[in-house]
Length: 218
Image 1 (tube, rainbow, N blue to C red):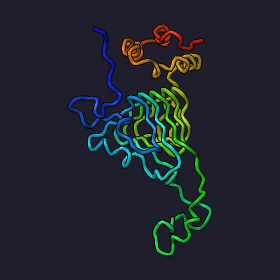
Image 2: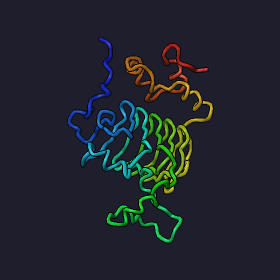
Image 3: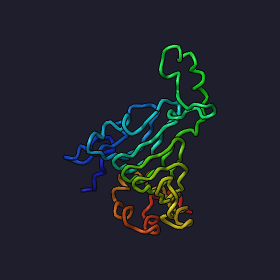
């Protein structure tokens, strides 16, 4: 009997563990895009991810998360709606408080934006990490617990600290280039299922040998 792939559309993929949710079938905001099998783990209420973990998301900037990402408890994405004016004596957003102050809402429009926040595939976020607006995190990266990510993270980079700094890369430049060409996260599920041990613990050479016919490796 052939191996059976997991289902990317099940909200709770781990039986008896409501703390783990797949994000793609959970999110409803048109400003959030999540790939297959990316999950969030939270013992309190993982299903509240959109309101508790994506903050100040007033648009139009998007949060884009790739496939097979692992988000530990307390991972938060701060979006550009948290921005305040800094060119005058006060940073307080008076127009949002209502009354006649709302007549000055033009003072809050056109604030600087860093654009969409984009996370690649196969990214692991440790407990309590914070990602600032407009950051781009590359494929295969690891963000250490408690890190505050204020700048872009390279593919297969490991970052930590506040502000997060590059500790090292998981592979050398040549192997990173090979991995980015292989894009195992885009393999057909049936094929991926047959090669889970290689994806999890094999070498880059072994992954290359296991790639579906037609995958660019050169």
